[in-house]
Length: 310
Ligand SMILES: C[S@@+](CC[C@H](N)C(=O)[O-])C[C@H]1O[C@@H](n2cnc3c(N)ncnc32)[C@H](O)[C@@H]1O
Image (tube, rainbow, N blue to C red; front, side, top):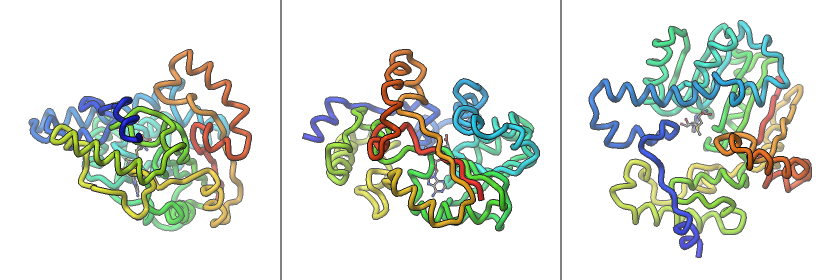
C-alpha cells in the first residue's frame, strides 16, 4: 500500500536543480571539465545567495529581522551552521555589514564552492568542514549562530545545541529554523514521491524500507542521488531526518541556560516555492489558528523557528 501510493505520486530530482547537493555526484558534474565543474558549483551558491538578496523571500529578513533590529548584526561575528555552499552566508555578509562571517558544513565540495564564490565577491569569509556536534571554535566566540534547515539532519541535536550555546558569547543569539518532523511537506522523501503527509499515517520504518526499495528499482539512473545506504542508521527516523518534534526541541532547549527564547510561529505554505502562488498564500491563512493549538502545531507549523539569547 505504502509503495503503491509512493509510486502513484512518484517524483524524481532534477540533475540541473542547483538546490540539490546531490548534483555533485552526477556524471554531468564528475565527468565535466574543470571550468564546467566550477560553473556548477557557482550555480549552487547563487541559488541560495539570490534568496537572501531578495527581501521578499530572504529567510533572515522574514523570520529573524522582524524581531531583531538589523543594526544589531553590524560589525558582529556570525556563524552559519550547515552553510551548504555558502550562498546565504555570503549574502548576509554583504547585506548586514558583518565584522567576520564563518560557515561550517560537512562536505568538502561545499567548502570549495563557497570559497570560490567568496573570492568572486571579494568577501573575507572563513568556511570550514566540520559537524555541528563538535564545533571547531573557542568558547564565547560568536555574536550570532544562524542555522537554517540543518538541525533536522544532525545526528545528535542535543550536542549541536549545546555546542551553539558554548561558542556564543554571553548575550549572543542562536537564530535557528528547521522543519519539525511531522511537517507535512518536509518528510524529505521528495526524490521518490511528492505525496505529503505519508508519515502522518504510516510507520516511518516501513516508509523508509519502501523508499530504499524504489530507489533500488530505479537502478543506475538513481545512482547519483541514491547514496550508499541500504537502511536507516540508528539516529534516523526517516532517511536523513532525526525526527525532532516541536515538543522534543522544547525539551532540548531546556538543557542549556538560555536567558531568553522567542518562538516565531508561521504556518505551512508561508515559505518556499509554494508560498509564491496566490492559492497557497490564501490556504496558509486557514492554518494560522491551528499553529497555536498544542499538538496541531506539529502538523501545521511551517517550521520550528527560534531566537535564543545566551
Ligand atoms: C537542507 S541543507 C540546508 C543548507 C542551508 N543551511 C540552507 O538553508 O540553504 C542541510 C545542510 O546541513 C548539513 N549538515 C548535515 N548534517 C550536519 C552536521 N552534523 N553538522 C553540520 N552540518 C550538517 C548538510 O550537509 C547540508 O548542507
